[in-house]
Length: 317
Image (cartoon, rainbow, N blue to C red; front, top):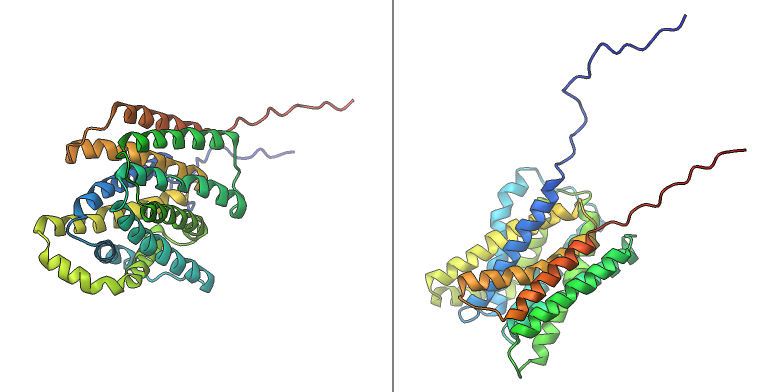
């Protein structure tokens, strides 16, 4: 006599398994990051007359570290391995220190369109580094999307650049920012798989602030001389594009591939154009809108996944 398995008892709604996060959360996190990072370009441009690149970087990072500290410490001190600490130090010095100083200085030497175009070299580097060191697949869709999106950003940069003058040092500084960003993102990918995103961001931001301490004297002097509105913009840069945006980006990175996440930053220049129109009353040329549309198409193509080949059923004779 066989006993049938009982089907009368329903599964208990309270389970020990941790529910997976909603599928829209990583996408929402990316959206928050892109809008806040785009606003940072507007803020940096506004603050160029009141704060030097190093002082602005230090002020932004100090505010970001202070804002993140209560949220990070509320979850306890992170337990990182020595190898993870090395990655955290490298990310803090490169992405939060060198990147900010180089970008701030670069934007004072080249026009915004050229700077945006140069920074967007980073998604290509990210995709290549991720394929080499993270074993991520470089799909044809990703390659085509990168090409389309970079073409769109190039149109934006060429349409908004001032004719004639491009500082070679400014170009090199923007390229340096793109390289350290790409390297840091690839280093951060394994970290956010094992450590909370808020811990990674807080520690890296704090390390970046320590690396920028040589600019402390200039920060104090320039803050005393700057108008209150400019000081408020520095606080905004630290609280929103740094503390919030880097945390949401780290969260998205823990749930998306580095290559696909990196290509989404091609949306920053189109968003920056809209914010510049609203906040700075800057009207971009018509071709810039075409570039923004092309960048959107490129991101959509890059995020497509190749269809798996249908498995053929083989019948044994």
